[in-house]
Every structure is written in structure tokens, then in C-alpha cells.
Image 1 (cartoon, rainbow over the protein chains, first blue to last red):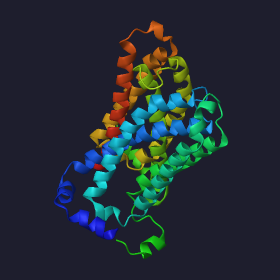
Image 2 (cartoon, helix red, strand yellow; image 1 turned 90 degrees about the horizontal axis):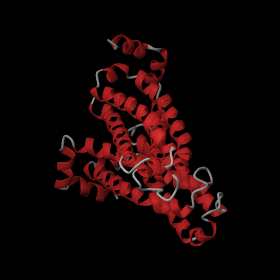
Image 3 (cartoon, helix red, strand yellow; image 1 turned 90 degrees about the vertical axis):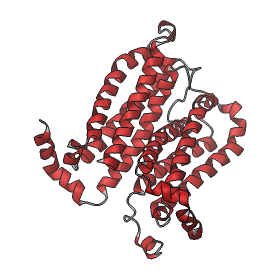
Length: 173
Length: 158
């Protein structure tokens, strides 16, 4: 992994992005704006599944109405996030919060895939129920908790020194 | 004119607490960001609906009523978590053009939201005509986007 990050670090495109005066400002600002769209929509989707909001809206209507916007936001969010890491790989490589965030992204992706392959298959039977079946509620709660974690660890990435001692002892930086 | 007021905020024991302790500031910043997500979700649901998109099969007044408590709740959290971030760096804020830009946009955004946007969203759509709701939805999205941009630039460029 370190080899990959060091390889990117040395690429001319990474260097020029890193040395650009404004690139990071634009990228981080766009990343925050698109985060609102992505996490805002996913949050209400999760709350619908968990039975906390929009209980009167059929589950598939939340999905068909709001997911295209969420996916648009995700494209911008993922691209700006990728480019920030691409431009400063050796800043993120030793960062505890960055890796915790990436781990949480894997969890929400797996959670969404599990929902998609299991209880969502019968969504026609329960999409009008104000309170979704247990498996769907569980998927909603798991996603909510981990998305809060993703937002928080994303913010904490700026505090690279505020991490557990054992992480510092790894000596990655 | 307001400089003495910002000087006073900077000198508060409350501000010193946030400046001198390690965890309170990042924790408050994390909560502020989570509240942004809730706010944007509740906002976008109604603004997209005003544009004829998003939850377009659902009646507008019902969508607006469902979103409102989340919008207000998130706004309250944003203000509460914004206060320590403002007072603890009050002089930086005072001299940052982005801070004033953000606050002007917040003010206009709040006025738009509690007046015409709220009134529009409570009415039956057949009374609204095709143009006004779209203009209000777009204005709302533009205003709150510029709030977020201004906010991020205080930290990056001030």
C-alpha cells in the first residue's frame, strides 16, 4: 500500500495538483457541498427504512425520486475526494482518521449490498408499510450510524495528530 | 463598528475554554457537519419538489410538513455548534470577508425560507402556477450552497 501511495506521490500530475494554489480549496469546498447532498439524501432514505421519517412515503418513491440526485452528488463527492488523496497521498497515508473513514465506507457499501440482495427483493410487499421489516430497519440504523462516523472521521482527517498512541507507534508517517 | 463586540467575544472564558482544550473544537465541528447533512437533506427534499423533481408524486404541503422539523432542528444544532466556533476565533471571523458573506447569505436564506418558501409549500400546487415555485426552489438551493461555500472558505482562505 505504501508503495502505491509513494508511486502516486511521484507522478507529475500528482505533483502539479499538489503545487496548484487553488486546487485544494476548490476540491475541499466541492467535497463538503456534495457531502451534504449525498449524506442528506442517504440519511433520509435510512430514516425511512428505520421508521424515523417519511413513513407515509412508499419506500420505492423515496428511491426513485431522490437517488438520481444522490448518485449525482456521489460522483462529485468521490471524484473530489479521490483527487485530494491523489494530490497529497503521503499526507493521507499515515492518517488514522483517513483509514478509519475508508473502513467505514466499506461497511456502508457492504450494508447497502446486503440490503439490496436480501430484504429489498420483497420491497413490493412492504413498501407502503410505515414501519419496514426488521432487516430493512436494521440496514437503515447501521447506515445512519456509520454515515455519522464517515462525516466525523472526514472532518477529523484535519487533526492528524489527535489519534491513539498505538497508531503513532506504528510509525507510518 | 462591531469590532469591540468581536474583541469581547474573543476574550470570553467560554472562548478560552475552546481554544485551550483539545477535543471540544473538533467534536463541535463534527456535529456541525452532521447537522449540515440533515439540513441539506430536509432542504433539498422540498426545493427539488418545488422544481417538480425528487418526490414529485407526493403532495407538496405534505413533503414540506415532513421536512420542516428536521430543517428547524438541524438549523438549531448548526447555530449552537457555530457559536463556539465563532467566538473562539472571533477576530479571525471579523476580518474574514467570507464570514460576512456567509452570514448575509444565512440571513437572506432564513428570510426566504420562513416567508415565501414556507407560504408556497403550504399551498395546493394548482394555485401556484409554473414559474414561482421553481424560482423559489432554485433561489433556496443557490443561497444555502453559497452559505456552505462561504463557511468552508473561512477556514481555508482566512
